[in-house]
Image 1 (cartoon, one colour):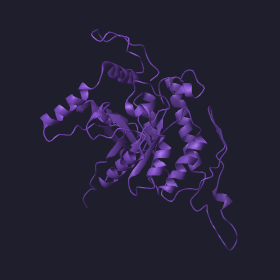
Image 2 (image 1 turned 120 degrees about the vertical axis):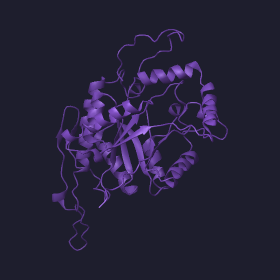
Image 3 (image 1 turned 45 degrees about the horizontal axis):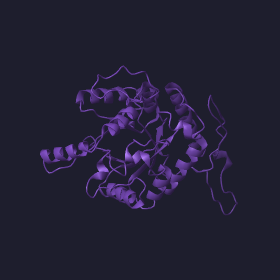
Image 4 (image 1 turned 135 degrees about the horizontal axis):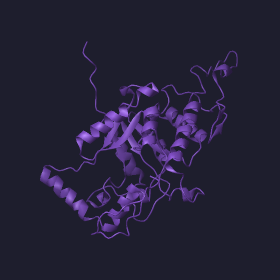
Length: 328
C-alpha cells in the first residue's frame, strides 16, 4: 500500500480591514472589522475555497495608532457563534485570553459552540501582552511573562478537565425508567491548583464530534512548551529565511515526544500576507502603493506593539537603541 498523501492545511487569519494596515484604503476593499456582511462574506469565501479554518484574533485593549482592525473589533465568540449558522464545513477559531477569563466559563462556552457547530470549533489560547488590556480588568500592570504562562497552563488543564467530566454515553434519555443521565458517568473535577479551584462537573455534555481543537502561537520558551503539550494547531511567523523556518519547525516538533505526542498530532501554520498581481511587477506596485500610505506614526506604533516597548520617542534616523527586556 502507498503511504497516505499529506495535504496542505489552509487557514484565514481574519482582519476585516485587511492584513496590511493600509489595505482598507484600496478601491473596493473591505473597510470594517465590525460589519456582519463583510465577516459573513469572508467566511463563506473561505468555505467555498476549501479552507480548513476561519480564525478571529482578539485583544481587550486598543490605541489610536493601532492597526485599524485592532482599533474596533467584534468579540470573537459572538462572531463565530453567528458564523456557525451560515457555514457548514469550515472550522471556526476564536481567541480567548487566559489572563482575563475563568476556566469554567471558557470550557462551557467552547463546548456549547462545539455542539452548535457540529464539531467545528477551535480555541486560540493566548496570555495577552502589554498593559492596555489589564487596565480594563482592574489591573495596573500585566502578570510577568513566566507567570502568565503558568496561569495559562493551569487554565488549559482545568478547561480540558471539565470537558472530560462527562463520559461517553452519560446521557441516557430513557423514557421507560425516567433516567435522563447516568450519574456514574458524570464526574466532579475537584481541581485545587495555584491559581484556580474548580469543582465541576461542567454542565454541558460531551459533544458527539469530540472536544474543540486548541490553537497556540507563543514563540517564547514557555509558549513553545505549552504548544508541544497541548496544541493541535500552532501559528508561526515566517521571515523569509527558509532554513530558520525549518529549524523552528523541527525544534517545536522535537518537543512533542516527551508529552506522549507524535509529529502528526500538531499542524504548524506559518503566516503569509499575499499581495496579488498578474505579474511580479504589478504585485510589487500594489505593495509599494500600500506602503506609501503608512505614516511614520503608524509604523512606529505597529513595531512598538510587536516588541512591547514604545519606540516613538527615538529619532527615525538614529541607530536602533538598546531596548530593555519587555514583558512580551
